[in-house]
Image (cartoon, rainbow, N blue to C red; front, side, top):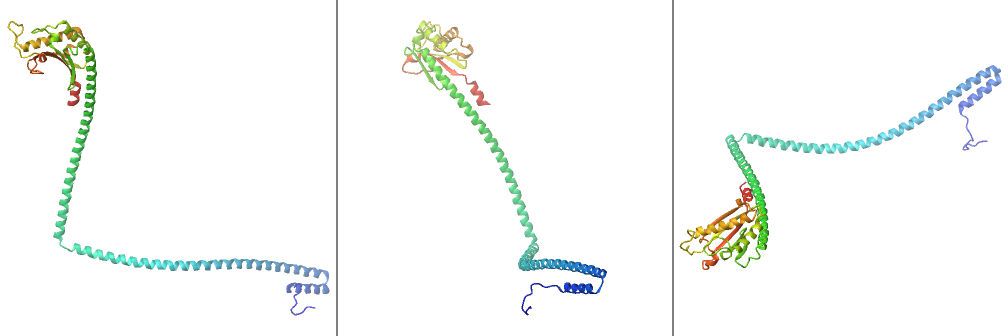
Length: 332
């Protein structure tokens, strides 16, 4: 026996109890055929009940899902309300700023209209002054551009001159080096005569071979003696391979007058004849091009020691480098 608060072990649904009672009634009161019919109807009703239970379960599941979606919608709605509040605050701030901008714009328009309504003659004067300044600036700009072009041309010309000068210096250095080497060869070739009335010096880019008359000539004569001829031949052999060398042979005398009965009119003529005699020996004893050789008489007019006549009586062979190439470089 169950008490009021006792929990039954199981509970039969009311619909099933009803069906069971009906079945028992029919089983007791009707024949088998009717029982069968009642049983089929009961099964059909049971199927309907199962279908209803399934629909109820499905509806419960759908209701749970809808409840979850409702919670999510409520959450999103709260967020949207918060965002709307923030946007509203921003909109109000922007509206204030827009109002300030409009106010400032109106003030600027008012000032602009006041300027337009001002003295037009003063405005025209300002425009005229501005135009004059603009034209002056344009003229100055043209002047600056022209000056820049001239300066560029001058700089280019200066750079060209510097390049030519550097080339000229290099050429002069090469010439000087060549002349030093030539002096060394000439000094070596004439080493047997140095200290015997013959000296070799290099001055101003030239080589001076000075020979006293006592080494070459007898007094009042233009004929070279054997010892002097040997010195001239040695000199000619030392310089014959120099293709860019000009050779000047100068005759010098003292101030003594030519003696009566001499073959020469004066010292000048004697100096020329002596220089010519030396040139002939150079040509006869070497392959020196005659075009590069010059004979000149200086008489008594270029003394080296006014107090020593013996030093003034001499032959000077001046060896000068050919400067045509340098001249062409300068004049280009």
